[in-house]
Length: 429
Image (cartoon, rainbow, N blue to C red; front, side):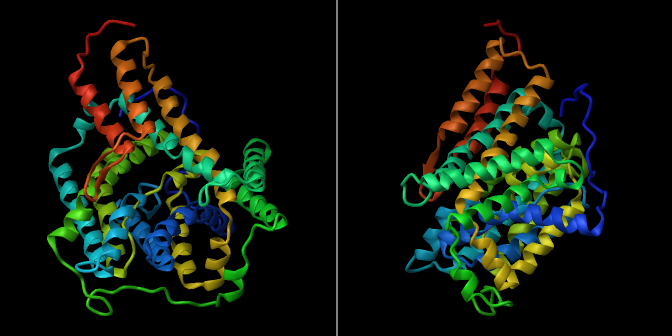
C-alpha cells in the first residue's frame, strides 16, 4: 500500500518476538477474553455447540498462523455472516441438519482456496490501484462504526429484550472507564493489558450488581467433551447443490472483511502482508480454518476486528501471543468450569469494552487518510468517502434468498467501483 513518511511507533513486541512465560499467558488470555463473546454467540443463536466453536476457532487460528508462516498476527473466530443460512439449514425438514451445515462450511473454505489460487497467479500489484487510501480509509472506518450499534445495545442492555437497563449501562461505563484509565496511566506490564483489566473490573462490578448468573458455573464439570460432529463417524454429510449455494457465495462477503482486516493490520503494524507472506496465503489460511471447522461441526470462521483492536491498543503484535490465545481456546473448550465462568460474563462488560475497541478500528481508518494527505476538498475524493461511509454504516444490503451482501461488503465494492470509474482529473469543491 502507499507508503507514508510518518515516524512509526515502535511496537512493544513485534511479530516474531516472544514474551516471557508469565506475560505470555496473561497477554494471550486478554485476546481470549476479547474474542470469546463473539465466537460463542454464533453457535448459541444457531444451535451449534459453543464448545466446538471454541475448539474450531483455536485450531483454525493455529492453522492460519502456520500457513502464513507465522507472519500475520490475526485471530479467527465464528463469523456472523453465516448465521442466517446455518439457522435455515439446521431448521430444514429435509436436506438439512448438522450434515448440511458441515458441507456448507466446507464449501466456504473451498471458495477461499480457489480465489487464493487466482490471486497467486494474478499477483497483488492490482491492489494498490483498486484499493488506494481514499477507499481503504473509509472502509476501515465502516468496519468499526458498523459494529457501533451492537456495542451500544450491549452497553444499554437492549441487546435481548429491547428494554433500557440503567444498571447495565452503569457496568458498561465503569468497564470502559477502567480500560481507559489503564491505557492512559498504567505503566510497565499493566499498561499492556488494559482490555483484560477492564474485563476484570467490569466482571467484579457486575457481580456486585447481581448481574452474574452462577447457574452454569454450579452445574459445570471440570472436564467436558464438546459435541463434535465428525463426518461419517457420528454425522452423515448432506451434499446437495442447494446446501452449497446457501453458504458458498457468502464467502465473498467474508473475503471483503478479510481484505479490510488485512489492510488494517498493514496500517497498525507498518507491514505489507499483501506481499509478505502474500494475500494468497492469508486467503488460503482463512479458508483452511473454515474447512477444519467443518470437519468437527463448527461454524465458518473469519479474522476478528476485536482482536485487531487489542493489537492497536497494546502494540503487542507477537504471533506467539495469538497462538497462545488459540491454545487456550482449545483447552477452554474442554474445561467446563472455565467455559462456564467466561460464558457468564454479562453483555454489559462486553459492551463497555466494545465501545472502545470498535472506535479504535474506526479511527485507524481516519488516521490513514490524514497521514496519506487525502484531499477531501476534491470532489472525487469527497464522493468516494461519502458514499462508502453512508453505504457501509447505513447498512445498504443486497438480498436474494439466503444470499446476503451486507453493508460492509457493499461499501468496499462501491468504493472500488467509484475509484475505478471516476476520472482522476477533477475539480475541487
